[in-house]
Image (cartoon, rainbow, N blue to C red; front, top):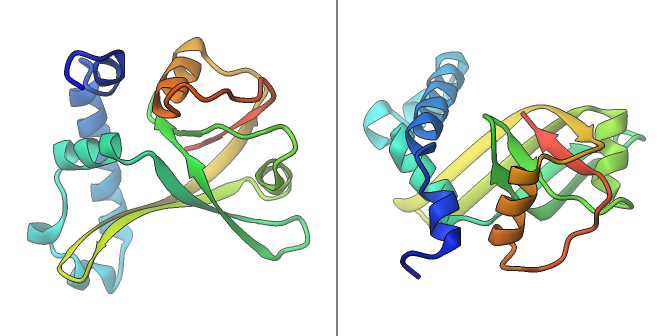
Length: 159
């Protein structure tokens, strides 16, 4: 819906900064990659602006973490990007909170399509549980959640 507040937040002046950050993040990732460089040569990768556009269209990701006892845990989650970090709204009793406190690391997978017509963004990194959420993050998250209510408890941020 053109002109909506949702579009304003997702297509703000920060898009160039977001696109640049995502491009740098991808370049750093591929510089450390092994076999995946052959599967995704530069001409098949999304550019920073393409990554920003793709992530603005996607609302949910699969978040993977490690339970305190070492077993894997994966669950779908809404995500937002703010201040060069992926932000994941989390209810105060969520398993992900316990997991991140025990093992402060998350992996996110955002995938669509099949075979040659697919897109995938995979990211992993250190995570932390935030006791307070910046007002901008709360607003962006509420817009991305299409007005659904969120627990006022803690949130998890994935860098």
